[in-house]
Length: 189
Image (tube, rainbow, N blue to C red; front, side, top):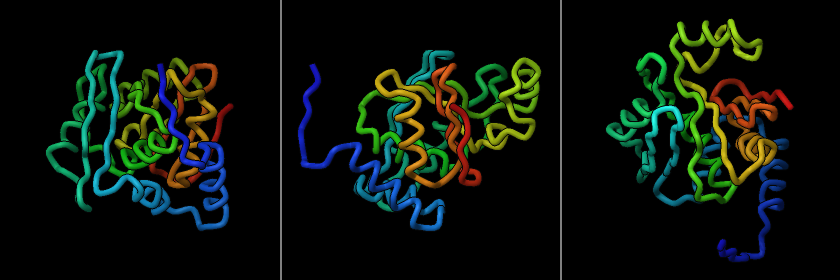
């Protein structure tokens, strides 16, 4: 049973307000920080991987500082599961993921489909699908492909787009959303 508490503000109204702000303001990475300011002095990320069976529920930022040890855990969690290779994930991507998660007002963790991809993995995936970019931001640790059971691809994409802080790709047929800290843009259906 889900308990809903009404604060007089609907999620749709909140997303609309953030979308309007994103249109008016120059799209910069600072928008994701603005969305996270309401989170208080902490930033939290929740994910699980169906590929490895691992889960992560952690506070990675507190009182204005990233926690280096926790970022290392996130790097390991978001590794290329095919090769085991890790890279330093760009914390801006984690911030976008956390801000989007907060906007959707869910407790369910993200299902991580893809974080870091080694060049070899990216080339293999590219040979099987036209939807994989040659110079994918996944290879730089700047992107994640995510899914939520309780939210649609459209809802997730709208939340990520409201951050106006990077790329948002909708992959409705495959039921996931791509979020990255690259240039602000969107694609997919």
